[in-house]
Amino acid sequence: MSTQTDLSAFWMPFTANRHFKRHPTLVTGADGAYFSLADGRRLFDCLSGLWCTPLGHGRPEILAAVRAQAGELDFAPTFQVGHPKAFELAARIAQWAPEGLNRVFFTNSGSEAVDSGLKIALAYHHARGEASRVRVIGRERAYHGVGIGGISAGGIAANRRLFGALSAPFVDHLPHTHDPAQMGFSRGQPAWGAHLADALERLVALHDASTIAAVIVEPMQGSTGVIVPPLGYLERLREICTRHGILLIFDEVITGFGRLGANFAAQRLGVTPDIIVFAKAATNGVIPLGGAIVQQSIHDTMMRGPEQAIEFLHGYTYSGHPIACAAGLATLDVFANEGMVARAARLERVLEDAVHSLQGEPHVIDIRNFGLAAAVELRTREGQPGARGREAFERGVQSGLLLRFTADTIAMAPPFISTEEEIANMVELLRGVLRRIA
Image (cartoon, rainbow, N blue to C red):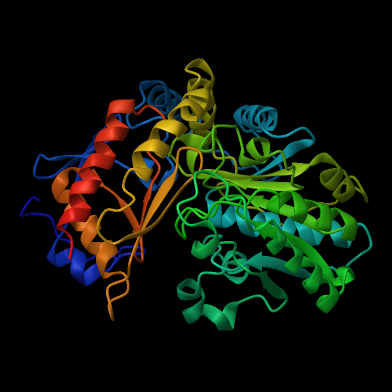
């Protein structure tokens, strides 16, 4: 770290700021699947940035598109005017999505995408004459970003504790689907747990279907530690929602764009929601961009009324930003030209076999995986929740790994460009980390 770098002004997000500023880890460069630190060390990017750089860092095609767009049109509003690349990217994303989801509303992040998806759901029911449908059903342990809608529907207690006074009032939650006693060390989707979806029927009975607008779930819960959906669970949610006229929203901010070996988790799992929200990998992390992909029937319902009227009173200054759209188009080109989604699917078994070889290592109480994502859960140190996770993270940096920890769970989601040898080496280095932590 340069002695000239002043760390005091930047209030870092989701970071123990005082600890970091006493023991800083400064990233100064990135290339391919590796980060470079200020002291010259290289770290393998075990989580594709924050789930957002599956194509690796420094992709020349994306950088060239960004440079060209900045010189041609650096900004244009999308309120009452438009620019070509926003329409082009929306059409390309619609081609990636499940059949029928072909209308795209752009945002700048996953948090904004979630809030937009929830607002679309409420506005849709209002437009069709069911304004009483105002309730949203989320799920325990869910992470839907940091907007008010996302925090309200989310189910990670620590993210809700401080901001409960701001939470939306008409929200309830399904139970989470993780039971280590029934599904510990599962490879892929656990066989047990489909019945947990029946909790939605109880919430329908409690609140009445006429008050419920939408159910929002992550197909695979990522931020809480790679919680994989049981076989049949999402199918059951879909059936219940359809029967009661409730919209089903998939939060695919993490799973979208190939992470599960298909364009979206909806296609991998064979369950089509009414709305998909996305972000992260849409631009390979180069520039923020997110959005909601909506069933055409929902869009068309909201297009009623006078032609000159604004149908949906919502949007952001940077919705469909020209440079972000250029990055998105270039990203989709790389995905297509290099067969990256198929590559992720091929690497799934490599990661699965490697990570499950850690069963029996010190402190390991569960391992789970799905697509090109996996988690290793560690036994919590008595009276010190999260301490083992943090120690594993810090020893990982010393060993050449940039891991991701949530409490005492280590998550891995390597870039799609990773080689089989790099994935094997990542897990072997983690094995050494586990053997050194207290």
